[in-house]
Length: 397
Image 1 (cartoon, rainbow, N blue to C red):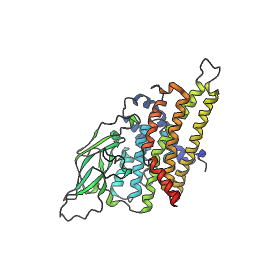
Image 2: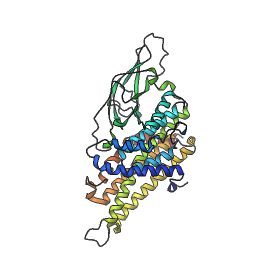
Image 3: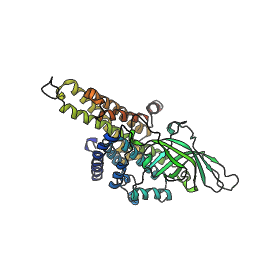
Image 4: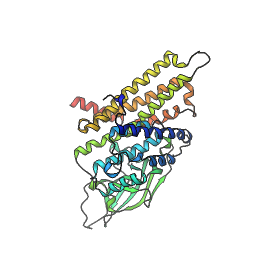
């Protein structure tokens, strides 16, 4: 199937229609709240009412049961309205789906989360990055600690950064270094020095510190999460119940794709804005729009070439994964992310060159796209890791 045929199924068409309607609403708010860094809580109210947050919840539990391709097509469209909101939603989809991959469907925590997403529009994210370790993809040990108590409960202390969607989150999965204060209480021995713990936003000792003041994704609410003597029961520890199946672990990387879709959406929005400008802009030195000028046409062609390449690779890999996940390698996934995010930066730059000085106006969305799109380079896998992976695959077979 050609990527030009998407959306292809009735479900894809319906999801893209919903995403498009929401994107058009969010685009108006984005222009108002971006520069002041306002977190758009009203966007998440709209997402809940539309049932959009249930995309990755299985049909058996009341959700859409959407495939990876379904999700990235919808997120590509949503991000064209407000990338900050789409980023928080992508991370929600990713982490819901990773839990579904790793936990049995009848797991109590998974059931709790999925029912809350369906019935209340609950939002989920993972809090993993820290000031001392940076991105967890680099392998640093968390400085946030979870200490097991003699009764099997846990006490968590630490600080997390980049907690995207912080003000709208209901569930937060916190990665911790595990320490044992249980002594000789007779509890089963710990099998790992790291673990993930499921918390809710109203857990005592948990708070959001308003630290987010970034150049890009200003409305994403990616604040610090502070944990001070957070006391949770044994059931909060998720890892003991998670699958260790290598096949499951291999599939998890694909669920970073909803985040990559956000940056493809930004690129599309920037290209479309530049096209609209070229068609209507008519300086008094010309008797026709600037779309007639060869160097403008050259920039348009380069934007579309980069978009065609990005969509072909990205949606092609997503479709292959949705059809047969065993045929897609981590190298394929990393390469697709690399192509999309680097081309997206290039496309937004071309759009701004086409528009000229007006592209820097705060009344014009291109300057927001320019700031937002660069964040894509900093999501794992980073470019250096991708290039190393591809080189090793080629040279070592």
